[in-house]
Length: 150
Image 1: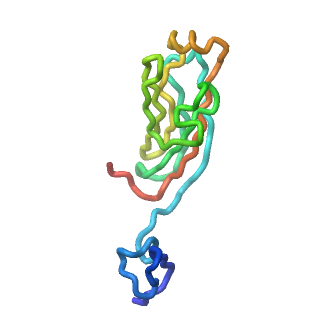
Image 2: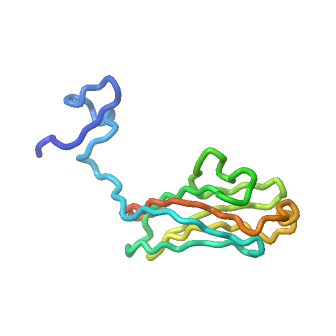
Image 3: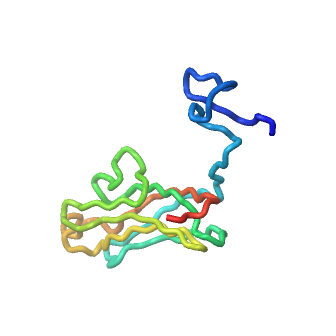
């Protein structure tokens, strides 16, 4: 078999004679193939008692590997995942009013589900945010053509 394709080595290593352990990328090895990418927003009314979720059909007959990142866009003085950007799900935090706040995702043989499992009707939250009517969770996802077996 010919030794050709895309190769990228670590700094200071010659691509022509580098060992596999000195490679950053080598196209001769299996790579994760992306099936679907996208983004969305989940809007959670403060009257909600259980949380909200979005369902994305992936068209595969198995539960694929997926990565989801999210950020609370509206609803907290500082986003749960940090004010500088998105955090990888799942994110579970103990909020300052002693309630578990959880953003999560799951995959099965038909769908990717992204959700927020924080009941917004918590009296402590409502008292602390009297003028707020909803929370928005922004997210983006990548679904790979690799079966999740974890």
